[in-house]
Length: 453
Image (cartoon, rainbow, N blue to C red):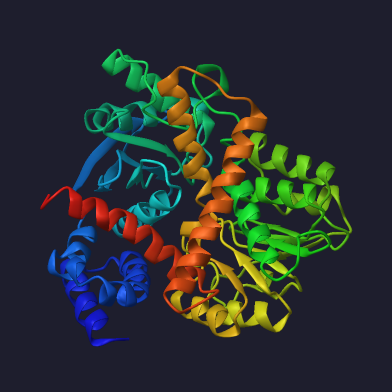
């Protein structure tokens, strides 16, 4: 670590104590940006980096709601509006017990560069609550969402801040949030993305993050004369991103082997077919069950519990060619990364946000495998949210084929931008450096143009 990075991180940590995920995200970006800052001293002079790590605005509020038994609960809600240099704040809402300010800031910070890479006019933001929708009735989720929006509506708008979904916030939650926003403002506008198809949503939006993750993997593989056809793919998670990453892999002729959730994972050596995937989608999206139930339906599959006390996740010991981490942050540590490389994995494309620890990333970079960081590889979700915003503004709805083609082209362009930038800065094949510098340059130049704001 250079003296500059060390001094910079000491300052960030002093100003933002106890926010370890945010520290991790900032350090990864700052380390990558050193050659860029050396080439552009004007950015140092204008303190662009110091300004970019400080959110433009943070809103925190209480969310009181009542469960079906009449008991009152109080959760904390927040929205971090990080950077609006290239467009209105854009980023998801996460409802999960682990949500705290450090996690939301890390996600919002990543979103700045991810959104810039899409080439669409979107700034970076993120929000959420420590509310857990798991096990709650539809009525309880509705009451929580309405209470959450009672405060959030003052801070968002189609030209100000456009939230979307994230972990714990799917179509049901977006519907309840939008309904309350409309009730409070008397405005029907594209203020949230991930809406229902019959009231302003976009085709392909649910599929977009998983599809884009696989499109990015396919582009990386092309640089080595390979394709996904016939590849053994390990997928973590079993939510929206994992489901559609698996679907696209199957369509492209790959063999999908795994799904997981917070309790454990399944391995199906025969391959997860379209029929088996339909079972998982029904299990997770409608029955809200656990992935262990897959083995009840398909007894030849192997199920194993995940022990959080272990220093590794046995999921990442499954022999594979391609790994698609699609669950949550820091799910691949140094031991897991070494296990993947040792077992023959030569391509990792991240569908989750920052699913690999800093030590794990170093393992991938040193092994010179194809490694697509989340801010590039999973940008398809927010890219299609941007396309939904465009359709809302035009009062149009594009066909499934048109949205998918636009998404595919965006992912091809993101890959090429990252690849080319890494080459220009003397580190060919380093998609981490390429993604960070390419995203930073777009935002930094916009900030320079707009003065000291």
